[in-house]
Length: 625
Image (tube, rainbow, N blue to C red; front, side, top):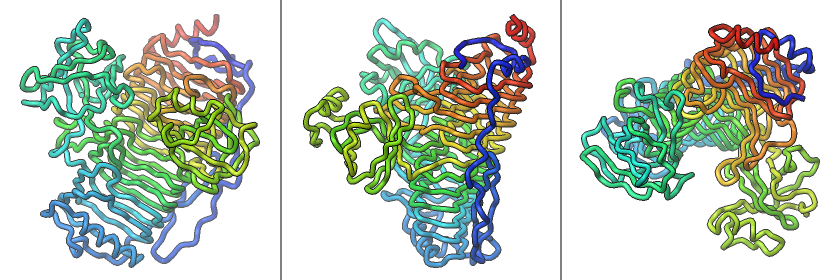
């Protein structure tokens, strides 16, 4: 067991290895080598080699064998204010004609639809948008890929209609007065501003590059977490607004530069769902979205994102500072086996990649019914749920869902036994998921336990040769098993480059069923944790503010990476059984480049690592004592 905070030379890994048991890189896998699938005459297979010898295949259409049709034949036009109907007709044709390339001519195409554009049941289809740019103002899903097979979307550019509704603004704080709980927002890039503008999030940024995160500082405000904090906004000049708040923003100081986001979780470019399989996104440019770029869910599997650029349009980089309101890629309740390779991802308002399965956090139990927070979890009749105890240890108990619905105190049949208290303590309007099972669960499940759907497994994935940079929050969150993350570059991420977590804040999110088998190798981590969130790599748990009482993460290898340009901790780790930190190079720019381990760490190996730079000798000497 390890329980200490120490500054140590990684050159002294042999000392650590002598007192820690040897850990394996990860389990060899149990039947994770897929056979090459059968293919139609329109298909080819991309082979993907992943963690621990895992192999899977992603089918994609063979362009030279497909019949080409022009989108213009269905009415798609750069002169139209809304191309929704024309594109829908083109996609309906493709659905009825497998083996088709839908070619979209060069130019900008406007979309102003009320409903989502559906790619439904397409098979052996290539959508070639090389040279075309779609401009949308759709809140919610712009395009949904539902129940498709062997579909490739290639070369297309997508942006938000910023001329109608900006995603972001930049302002400077002036006349901050903690005594009166006021400050002024000077929008120095604009001539005039509207005091009625929508404010969803405010995040401190670099005063020179206007990218997320100021060096060593992370001042921030989110409306959904701090409703009512901003009490009044009024005009104080042509391009100046005066803000009165309740005191929580007194940290904002004169001269601070902030990015204001008008949108955070308001939309997604591509939603992959309905068991879609063998989907390829290649050479895309996603310049803007009020939310995310790609969500994969609904048991989708065998998908890949290749050579794609996510960032502000270089043509407007002086005016636009945010690409996406939230994550770039969010993969949840999918069926794994995906590849992200050769992408350039920057300036989004949250993580670059978040991969996990959904959880339910139990608030109350009565007989065969449980009420839980489960905002990111798919639960349907007939699903089998597994349960973990309050320490997050797996139990042998399972139950089959008979009914599921959303309930508040007003419409719930809560009865007695403290169930009503679970609602009233949270607020009458809080929505919980009410799940009825095939048997009494009250002897096995209690408040504070967690549930997961045993029909989902988002693991077995590869994230390779990408460039993640200058975004808010983290680089990538790896919360599913059998992952390979190699040869990526992380630069100037506001928070940690890598986060391996199980994270439950009941009323906001419930993520991460645990990780068994993860290799993080050959990556370059430069100037990350720029805003001092705490460390370069975090391995941790949080269950409504408390740590798990057992090992949640197993067989983690961190090897052959280079860390530089940072002045916070290298790694914080807890709840891990089997961690190998081998052959890494750390440029020590600060004596704060340390490790911190919690009490639930075992089978740890540190070896063949090197320190270089100003604090290398000091670190080695400290370890020797």
